[in-house]
Image (cartoon, rainbow, N blue to C red; front, side):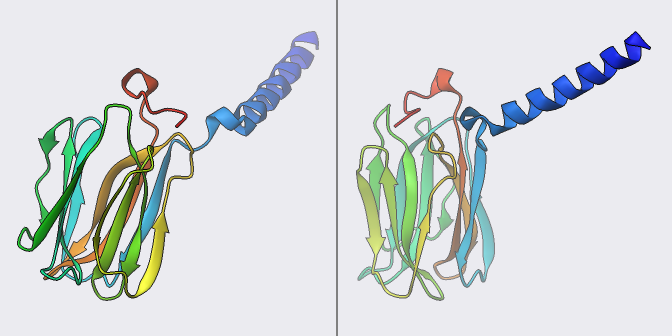
Length: 176
């Protein structure tokens, strides 16, 4: 009988500890996804790489009317291009303690404009702001942009953002 009581006590204690652990602010979701915006027609892309993002390139149509392509550097190694490389290119290189913490802009059929904002308040913007607004950011305040995905056809027709907390051993941006 005592072993049964002890078993119930341990089971209740384990349940209580699980709720305390899950309710802890330190255990916020480490990964989040900002769903794609735009018409979403064409070929799918997903720009991923190993390590942290160290630079971003954007190609805009001549005259800046919409976004033609993206490229992301991970630990100074460039990903393949999503979309197209003709048009005007813009680029931002991140500092060692810097990360992308927000992606915003405007869209209609194409992604008309995009702004990448860093943890240091710097921005990379391209395109012309017309259409519907979007604003993407992580659910965890310590997370940063890990990769983007979407579709392209003549230009970028959609963009979604994937966020994650990078382990502190390789992330000096924790706690921005």
